[in-house]
Length: 269
Image (cartoon, rainbow, N blue to C red; front, side):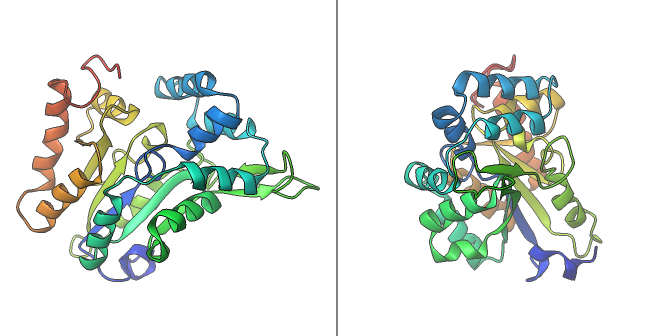
């Protein structure tokens, strides 16, 4: 695929920021929130996360079970999440900076498009339309409306074991000729981000979360963030040539070894 055909290349950016949505842009994961509060609960959901990290199941199967446990009408799910899911307090500042500096923001999510759009519209406002969202979808079950009790079902983005293999979106950008290829960033927090972890030039892994454990275990370079003020500061330094992605990537593993990544060096949160 050539550069003009890639959506985030429309403005010929030198940098692109790909990011997870739930628990990364937001303070809480909307899918976890639904599962814990109106689905089968925290314990079973958390066991699914750990089984995915340990390779005992796929994220696709774990996430499918989570969403099947939620039978509340879809419009009520959206209303619940819009009322309870909050944005990282520094994301809007980063996003406004990115708009001014031609750094497109692309959300790659295992969540569902209508929920993501509703939360972004509520928390970011009209500029949320400038964020590309690539995610899973939702549809009505046969003979039902999505706003009926037990009336909706998850539709995965692709046939992969992830349900949404985020690397499939990132890879065409990485394969552009050197004189066109942008520097790419990714921010994430958990098991839904495993497919994207190796694909960009600099990975931001949220402190204390499962993605840190995975990256340290697989020797994937990363840098740790607690909130989007850290991300903005680091990306700004790179855009302004004050540091390199290579130097930034070394920091995460050093922080992890020092016990400063929110998990211990034996991989426990």
